[in-house]
Amino acid sequence: MSEPLISLRHLSKFFSVERSVFGRTTSVLKAVDDLSLDIFPGETFGLVGESGCGKTTVGKMLVSLHTPSAGEIWYDGCDLAKLSTKARRVYHRDIQLIFQDPYASLNPRMTVGDIIAEPVRVNKLLPANKIDDRVGYLLNAVGLPANSRNRFAHEFSGGQRQRVGIARALAMEPKLIVCDEPVSALDVSIQAQVLNLLSDLCGEFGLTYLFIAHGLNVVKHVSDRVGVMYLGRLVEVAPKRELYNNPLHPYTKALLSAIPVTNPAHRKERILLEGDVGSPIDPAPGCRFSSRCYAKGSCASCACDTVMPELVEVSPGHFVSCYLFDGDGRSQQPPG
Ligand code: SF4
Image (cartoon, rainbow, N blue to C red; front, side, top):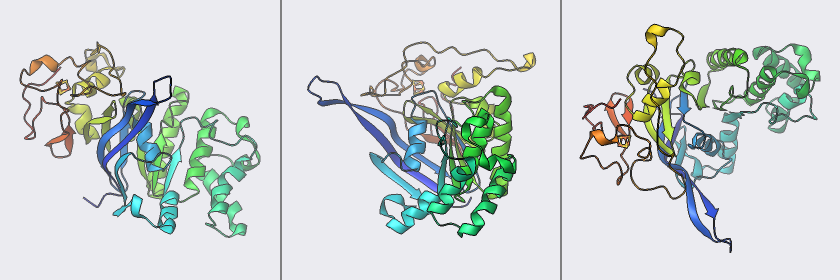
């Protein structure tokens, strides 16, 4: 396999929480806790988890909207924290973000043409007389008519606005795009169109995606590998086919069981999680999923409540953080 384009090494992001009346920081919210991950050139890595699990925070650290509290981000073999100002500028050009809400992310006072042209102009990517052609090319690439350039964001539907957001990201000629739940604000009928567009653009522009979503059904169609997060930790990472056919972590199994199935022959029993969702504020030691885990009692010797399980490789490319699976690929007792 080629060298990773992005390597996250023990990445953490903690937020201070003021709880006392004197404004003293008494607690720490661990949004992302010791996350390590490689993303390879040309792949689409799906990052999945419920709201508040820290997946968007990972994306924001990648595009430098958040500074990591600990850990490293390596880009193309270089530590981001040690890049020169000039190299950092190139990094910020190479890594772009597509936002969840296409309406809020577009300036209502600018025409679509200006929105797409602005990053090209500011970063001096093209001579002034070539920018119009580039805008036309990008509008065509995302399936919008050329005359869209003179219109404003409010004149478009949600799906068309997201296409404008995609064109704006492409304008910087990025290598990696962080897609932060790009279809969750869209009608179901439009979601498939935008997902197909992103897949097509991936090949056409040689892109790499970090695709963030809260459901495994969305990333199934676009991802090469999938990572599942729970309360700031990665709990399972595997190639797409392996994860959907052979999920190991109890939380991944519960997420998969929640996907609606149209064919009754393929319908599986729904795993309903009980218990309270743990808090990312001063989390208890032990497995973050332990308060809701239906498989916890099946291994008497497991330290579920006291020590956090490591993410270990149980088969080639398949990593899981659960005491029920050891590092040799053997299940002590399969859950579910
Ligand atoms: Fe459940 Fe224990 Fe595995 Fe955590 S480590 S998922 S609590 S069995």
